[in-house]
Image 1 (spheres, rainbow, N blue to C red):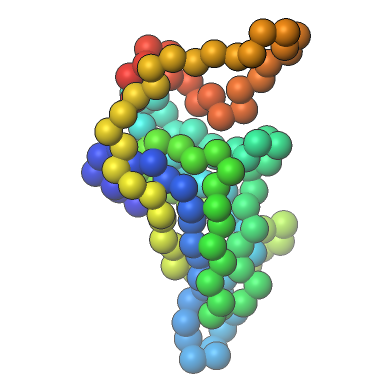
Image 2: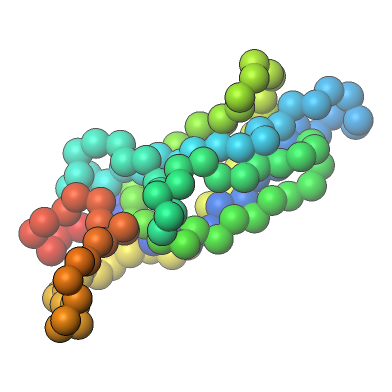
Length: 129
């Protein structure tokens, strides 16, 4: 999905193929990859626990809406169907968010932390997104 400019992506929504009850084409799970020009590469979305696979659909007609624990800034987004067995997949997808017109100004951690891991860090270093 080409968003043309940077957006803060906060939710995804998926649905299978509508076929008047014919067929079972839907994605049981999927991964999301995103692109931002300043990164220069596709990044696989991970939640706060480091999990990459998002729950998808269990039928062709119900919508599954996923709130992204760690929203991301991107100009392009890919949905990659995931299954532990071969199957035919069809996905209708939606993204929720808003245009991104900011950058991070500062970043601090409370004193006393002996370990600090930023699970949402995706590689930009200079404060410019």
